[in-house]
Structures are given as C-alpha cells and as structure tokens.
Amino acid sequence: RAQIARTTNNLPEIVAESPQMKEVLRLVRRVAPSDTSVLITGESGTGKELIAQAIHRLSPRSDKTFIDLNCAALQDTLLESELFGHEAGAFSGARTRKLGLFELADGGTLFLDEIMEMPPQLQSKLLRALETRSFFRVGGVKKVEIDVRLLAATNRDPKTAVGEGVFRADLMYRINSFEVNIPPLRERRED
View 1 (cartoon, rainbow, N blue to C red):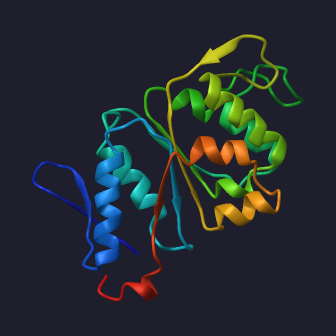
View 2 (view 1 turned 60 degrees about the vertical axis):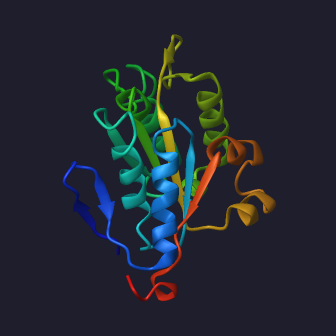
View 3 (view 1 turned 120 degrees about the horizontal axis):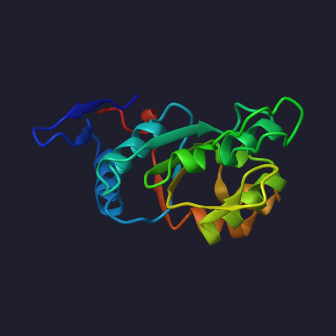
C-alpha cells in the first residue's frame, strides 16, 4: 500500500521509489488543478483511494468536501438514495428529506469506488447528473443543481466492462476524461 507523507507546504505526497509510481504522481499533479473527471484503475490494494485523495488535496477544491462511496457496498435501491438523496415519503421508511452524497459534495469532490459495480439503471441517472450538473432526489420534483468533481475507481478492465455491456459506453466516456492506472505492487518492488 502507498503511504501519504506531508510535505512542508502541507500537500500530500505518496511515497514512491519506482519509475511507475513516479509517473503516476506526475499524472496526479498534472490533472489535479483541472476539473476533469478521472478514472483510477488498478488491482485491489494498489492505493486507488489514496490517489483520489491526493488529486483532491492538490486541486482548487481542496478546502471543500471529499466524499467517497464504495458502489459495491450497497444494494441498488440504497445506492440511489445514498447518491441522490430522497424526499420525505419517497418510499416506506423515508420520514424526512435526506441529502445525497452529490449534494453533500457540492463544491468539492465525489469519489465513487468500484464504479463498475453500479447497476445499469443507476448508471443512466449518474450520466444525466454529470451531463446536466443537476438531478432529482428520489421522489423529488425540484431539480437540485450541483458543482461536483467526480473521481472514480475500478479494479476491472474498463474496455472489457463496456464490451460485455456491464458498463455504459457513454458513461465511461464521461468519467474517463483522464485515466490514471496504478500498477500492482509486484511490478514495482522498490515501493
């Protein structure tokens, strides 16, 4: 696993000795100042979340919220409510309005880990939210406007997931404006 060390100017730095990780850090520094969506790929345990945190901390949004969500950790119905929130009465048990992670991350960064595990119907709602920078809460009738930078990660091969129909090609295009691939530790023994 990568480690975070604090530099004198309080910016995060992932400690890396291998040429592969030095290249990853070069890419992180290059993409961080922009608002570009980034797809971070690599095997489980390679440090994808640390890279996402580094991109956020080196970005102009660093003083705003960084929110992360593992898309594989929740059932489909809970995932939609977690991302987009819901209105009171939207479903049984929804007694009050709940703000979703998109709203909570407004002005900051939303990191969706294991994004390829997102169900197809939710992929289309996510695509629409990213295109319009707005969405409806579950059961809502008023659009919610957002300004969120999206970072996503997967341990799957993106081309295979799209080719097999597991992941929408148009959503892949939207989230993969810039890709950072983290090689496995066995290929970078210096780290």
